[in-house]
Image (cartoon, rainbow, N blue to C red; front, top):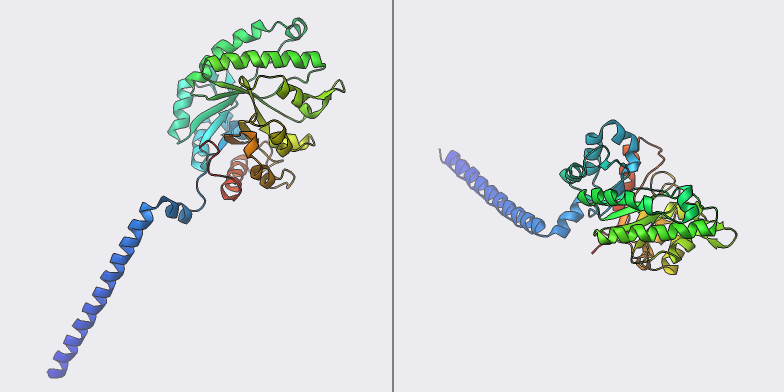
Length: 315
């Protein structure tokens, strides 16, 4: 019996030692976990890239929003975008929704309403007479709707190509007037470029430069679309330096998904972004190599992983 008793005692002692070792390991793991949770930076590093403050121009998913507004909005929020820029204003509504509901829907999916692309071009008569009072009346209800939706910015997404310097100058005065209305209502007004603005008008001055020089910086900012600047054979960085603090918003766009074409040079743009005055980045994807929602997600992931893109430009 003695050997059996000894063997039984030995096994019990071994189990005790193993149990104590496991307890020590569990305590150490618990302490490490507590420290990890208490340090947001460690948690963020483990989860991957820090979530960056990046908005989406909803025109990127235009067909999805036409087909199923609710699902489209949910998809954008689940991707990880932090804000939206609308492109569906008509008749006092956004994508057919009352301003207050649109705001609530955006916030329901963890985002904020940042801006809207909203256009009102001048008529031929207004250009000829230089009296754009009728168009300005249209802006009264429009600005009120945007304010109710929680917008910070209203952006003119395009303009008909002016034929003369005189017409371009009329548009500058018009934009100043709209900007004044927006400012009085607590909003900011801006202009979004394409490529045609980088042509000379009447063989005199480049249209984009004329717009910047002849609009009031207190009333009109510029949402630079970096892709269209490059397509217009110009450098976004040179414009940052030439006109500091005029570009509060940047449209981050490529030929298709961000970073795929190699033509835009995002690393140089972001490394030299400071003079621009940019506070907000807005992704736009107009053409796709994948399903639109996949392309839009890939574009966000490109910026999230890019070491040259800061967490936020509005701090």
